[in-house]
Image (tube, rainbow, N blue to C red):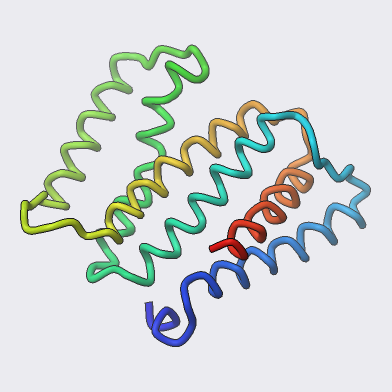
Length: 166
């Protein structure tokens, strides 16, 4: 949060993802893994969703009045994964998963205590970032056949472009 007072959130995100790109590229090259660019389409969906998540999260972390609330909302992605597993993967959650989803949502509502005083855009960004993280995670599930280093290089390259655009 203090770094956000010195540097713009876009610059912080750009430096973070650029370092990941350099490190992952080295690991991919020296590890003999294949670099992947154009396909499969799921890789692009994963990288775009992850890049949106990165931007939304860094915005939220540097513009919040309550870091704890941003962290609560940012870490809701497992709930979104459980909810999206049905339409995306065709896996109907079991009854105990529905109970876990309901209790997690109730916990978030109790912690956040929604008010009608106005919109806190940092919290909206954190929640949206959590949702886009879940899309990226579901994409990873479908990319098990690719080397993880290749996936990280692709994501990092796409997120560098997103950060430059931001």
